[in-house]
Image (cartoon, rainbow, N blue to C red):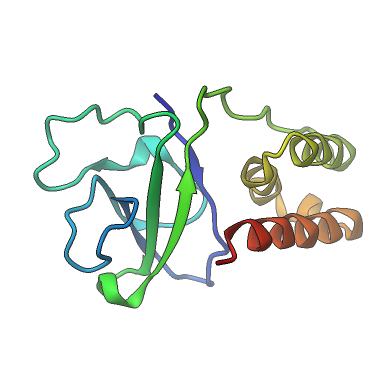
Amino acid sequence: MTAPTLVWENAPGQEYNVWILPAGAHQETTPALFVATGVRSPVPFSTLHPGPGHDDQDSAALKPDTSYLALVCLSGGGRLAGVTVPFHTAPAAIGPPPAPSSAETALALTRQLLDAGRASDALMVLAELPAELRHQPDLTRTEAEVRQVLERKNAP
């Protein structure tokens, strides 16, 4: 089983609702596999709970090597007011990357994750950095590069 961390850019003071749906699901009507309400990015998978009608499933993780949709909406906006992002879990979970202790370590770890094809993990590393580290020029450029990789990867 795998338990990803969901990462996006937060609007100031805004909370979000997150639904994990099966791949190809209808955004508004398909029952969610997992749900979190009133959260801000980054969202560890452990904060999600089984959706209605899915109480019997393993609430700890998603299935490996499986496609899903992450639906992120502004709290109170309903499921049509959100954006779905397709994602696919790894065939074998390799665990979360370690937390960097400096800008240099964060940059090296981000590069290593990008080279390994783990752009989402690279973005997570950058998103979890304290503001004083995250806004250094090298890390700002690297974050833009990571976002471009993710956009190309998720482009239709």
